Image (cartoon, rainbow, N blue to C red):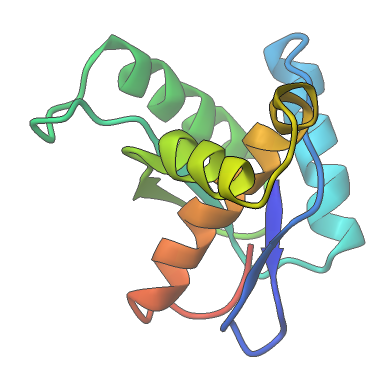
Length: 126
């Protein structure tokens, strides 16, 4: 998970939520939304390289719909193609060893996703 500064300019990685089961995952996300006083939730949508919606993206859309049903803030999708690759490359370039990169990869990738959303002028919020 990542959050932005109040002005919606900079995304910062804050946590990795280990997937357990959908209901618990939703509750974990909503706790962080309340903790950080988020104005919206941006969910990374894993589109195929050709931009299509494959099986994994369909599962993510279903989860996002469930999340939206329990959330008091809007839930939006944002293309996450190559966010993990970018996160891995940035951490490797920074000299982090493979074991440390693995532990932080998802949170850093979330920051890349959110930063892309913010850079497109979509507004502040995680």
